[in-house]
Length: 170
Image (cartoon, rainbow, N blue to C red):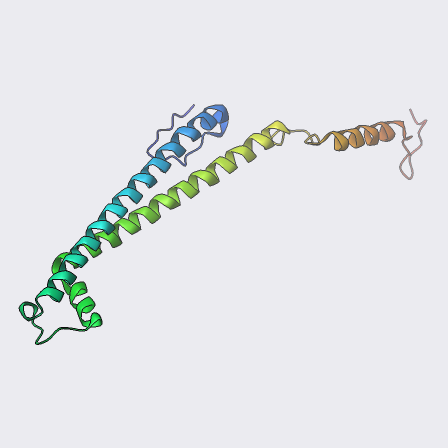
């Protein structure tokens, strides 16, 4: 029986579904916590980027000459200057990278949700003997009653001899 580690959480041992179901909760918890951590990092970087933007904006408004403006710049000119600031661009690039990380963590959480659904379906198939050599039994009580009645009728039906065969040939 192969032992799966958590390095690839999407490996599933179908011969050990009870362990996979127990493992699912732990793996999902890890993925959700990683997503929350990524969101927290992103929010911190956005806040820092906003602080840098506000500081530069305020400096330009207070002293436009020191930043290369002959007179008080318009709102759009000030915003354009702020977005070109080196520190602002550093934090903006960090926000973009962290947004990508968050998106990847969201994809992992979605994949874990899909994994959970797949495990549920595997257990359901196992419970109706899908993998057995015989016909699967019906899943609902009315379907089972109908199948039982159909089996009884088939058992009572006389067997007709094939063409050219005689029933009493023995």
